Image (cartoon, rainbow, N blue to C red; front, top):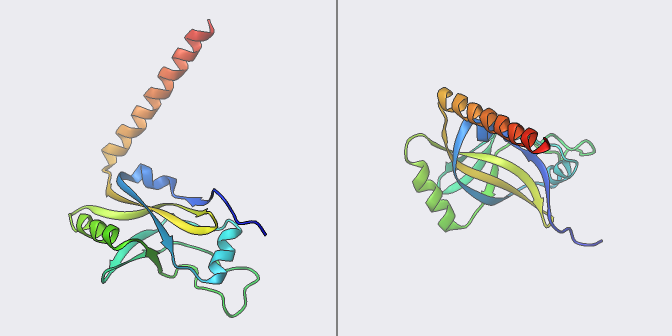
Length: 156
């Protein structure tokens, strides 16, 4: 069987970019059990309520839903169990220092396979206020309208 190449997306948290100002992003490995990997290969996962949190000097992914593997037996996993993130020590200390500042959190952006290994893209983020969300939505609408006007002018 040939080794997998490239990146295949499993799940993404599109709402995170709407709810947070993304500052830094990191790619982390995840410590998974066998049935979790099989469930992910079926393309089933949800990052909607997920977040990362330090416990001691280790970083854990909390509240990410990976449903039970359908053909699993008594070895199946708990769908919302806490999963250890695998990062270099220097990255962990850097993230730990930045999260100590008020208002910062760690949110998962996407879950994917990269060369056959499960990875998660996490981001150091600050929460947006309601008016920031409205402002970003308005800017996006204005940009779309301008592009439509330009493309209509080019057609003439």
